[in-house]
Length: 76
Ligand SMILES: [Zn+2]
Image (cartoon, rainbow, N blue to C red):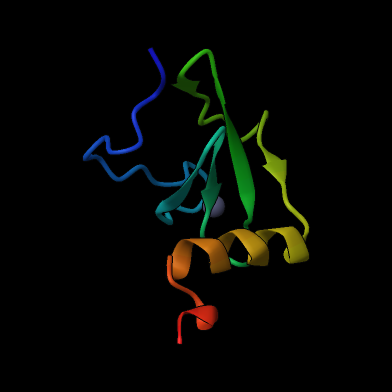
């Protein structure tokens, strides 16, 4: 069973308590200075600061942009 997309629960980053964004295989902290990525392993999110990967500002921004609006600027 895959980890459901709509889990009805808002996880927060264990480091900075900012809500995390859902990615297909990870959760990403939405704080611009934290930017930690928590992998989902065997359908279980691993909210471990020690094992989290800090994304580059560019990569993080891409993910945040994708989270924002599904329609995007091309929708006009
Ligand atoms: Zn964080």
